Length: 413
Image 1 (cartoon, helix red, strand yellow):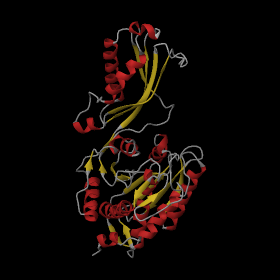
Image 2 (cartoon, rainbow, N blue to C red):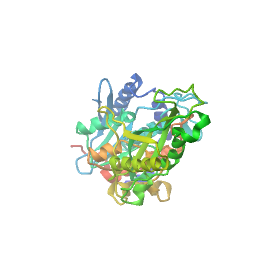
Image 3 (cartoon, rainbow, N blue to C red):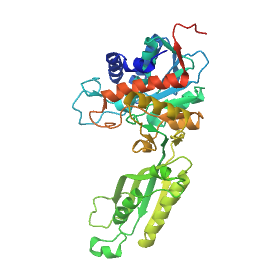
């Protein structure tokens, strides 16, 4: 009998850390040459492991790295999904963002949390099983995509080109928690038009900046009226990200003694599966109507932003008792000895991920679970070593459970 837990506990930790450190050293900014270089390297590594691997066209010169560990055809298939593109480096770093530094506690680097640690974890899980002499009965598909930061163009391209599996695990950073629902997103713009007067007669004015100051906290507290459950309401959110106010639409900021009669706000909203952008905007419109009633003479306008044919990430949902969620829960329990936090967990529930495309466009059942999150998208971005290594072990057990496993010495068809 194969002792899968012992195999998982005895992975080559140094090799796994080295793999992630190498990935960090690629400056794989979105739509950059480094993004393609890393995709090419991932194909090279997967081919070296014996996988069927290739570069898959996305758009322009952008490519995904797709690899398949072929099973015998007797088990369910499992797809791992993660993006290779990263956010740019900000100010405030104390370590080299592309140095791949590993110390006793963390692995550092831009994109290590979002989400090269998740990518490396699935890659190393497959490699560790191969090195242990095991083979899956069902296929394991590794999809390392580009363009997640542009609405998921890479994953959408993969799905439209026929990449499918019975189940998926998206490795976005959740601090190893099992995320079963996340929101869809939209971008909104609001204009407030007041009535100007000189500051000496401001009692006669309708101050657009003052109106905006009242509006922002109301929007920040808003949830949408079509939330079917409290879990859906948990990931409803409106956030005002920019605000500009001055005199007229031309923003004459030099004329400070005048009461400002124009403000432009923009931000983002989040809503859950089964909810709609239209209802979210209607609820925001109601808030604006109430503000107009309180401030006679104020005129308001709201509209949402289109993306000129670029995709937006849809909401994602899976039942907590589904096959894939139970599998990842059991693997977590075996490795960590405690129950895995599972459900509509925030802050990850506010994220947009490629799981939305796999769920909506691909029609697949899956879960979002990956290393990283606590130190995501910040100076000295990093991932806990133990979390990364345990994620590899958990993925290994999930592969064996979903796909089935056999000794590699058996004849392959």
